[in-house]
Length: 279
Image (cartoon, rainbow, N blue to C red; front, side, top):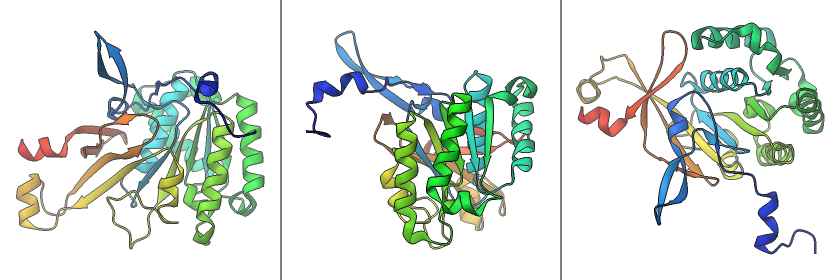
């Protein structure tokens, strides 16, 4: 019967487990288990899981877009083809952002331009509101470039005024990306009522539940003398953090890490928050 398998029948279809580089410390935070010298051992994956579709969530100005743009440029610089769906910034603004990331990373932008194809849904209500039209357009872009990586910034833009359909939209996009064997990052926005450090996004926990894992970006504005002394940061300054909030494809470090957005506009993940406070 269709959809019923013996486990051994799935082996030939199971994707290999390895990392797709983001160019950040997150590459060291995923791991797999290998048998070494007669015992199991954790081995760094070296990136986000191959063919994983991950949620990148956080309140505004936490580094979500910076992260996925940096990821896109890193992948393009390694010779992989990237489809970038923008529902927020018009394509010409995205061009400047990606060019800036390339300059900051020391990558020759002219050499990677052909490796990135942009789907501008920010200017098209039909693309944002008709899932069939969007996936058909993405399918054309993926096949045209033989892409293996997809970024959507943001998935929330596809249901921003109709959150009741969030699960349906996210499931449709997820299934499409899985069928096309994409490694993908989908940016999710938060509502003001949601905890900034949780995996929940606009549309509820459906996004986190459907996708393969969640990376949570957060920030804390230092407002009290106690916080200033605890974090050794002046009042009014910002402490940014990042953590992996679950992943069903690979093991991961669930610790909260201190993060900075550098003067060049890049993500720089430092040490664990617990170590930072002790130091």
